[in-house]
Length: 505
Image (cartoon, rainbow, N blue to C red):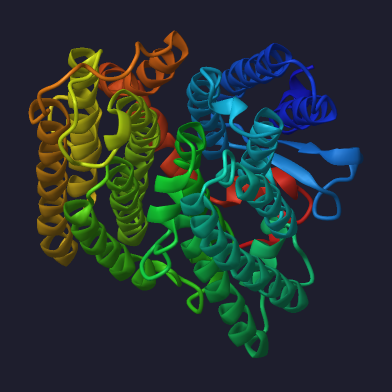
């Protein structure tokens, strides 16, 4: 049974999505029950997979019992197990929040939500480039429909930009995969790593072109400068549960960069590909941080502010990749857990605040006092100091680890920029909090009490801030072991290709 556990993060949302989309006119309670149960089961499965990966062994599932490099394989290592669990935790908070009524604003929400999870989980598990493309398309197709859930002019406008850019990225992705397949004769990432290391000199230019095209595609998914302009409006316009789930979408791009450039184009691939992505990622990450800090300060809507905070996290995470050391990768993984859950929780919290402010919504203008203003203010305070990186919550630990990982001249760039970005975030959040909760106009209290489902979703995600502090030791140990495993790709290659790995350098 345990050997089949790896495929369940793909099969569970696939089956749940089919059941939900088949019963399109079914009862709301039925759809909610199926979606919530499937998501909770996914959480339990990912916990089991994380425990399985903790011992450091890499395992895989060969679909149809066709072994690599000829068959499709799903690979489980420390990194993929961590990303699967993070996705499941985020999804539980988002889907429970949606059960308060957001799921009834359009059709097929829960079915599309499950297929979005199918695409995300598949991207984290797949062992070959073409199926990475396939799962990217699955998650993107579901996200197109989820972004339009509930309708509205702002969502339609944002979705057009989102769809067009991602279709262009998908086309570029397919071209890059074709180039690499033509140059290496394989799509399996472990097998491609071996063949790239043995590549004839006349094909190195072609493979370099394919590798850089992949970097553009993954940079678009991660929303790195100058490919991030689609993100703020898309995330700010999306329904709150969808925006919360979208918090993991940029991390799919981060994951893809880590996976491809530590496996296929690792140091063992030869001097022609060594640190191929590092200079590009490093300088563009710093530019992303600078641009995101300007956006944070300029935001005049709480949703838009949180969207720019997602971009701040993207710049910080990519800086960790640009530093290119196991210590930096460990730091970025700790920070990735923190920022995904906290920004997801803030999107949900913004929706709750907007519901209680009447016509003012989430705009940062004076509004009437709120029914549950004190409770919302307290939760907002916790989320704000967590996402800004203020002690004693997890954001401070994540950024401290990242700053400590920088070396030499990297510190001269990263330290002032990251600290100034944190200051800008703190100022913007302080201004937003004072406007929302202290500068209220006189008048009748607006809004009605919020649902328990909504409170659960927000508290479930924002509780990660103190929990990551309490569990900082074991979490840091796991992320460091994950970084060490990524730095030694030969272990994965030997697991998938035991008969050919001996020839690898």
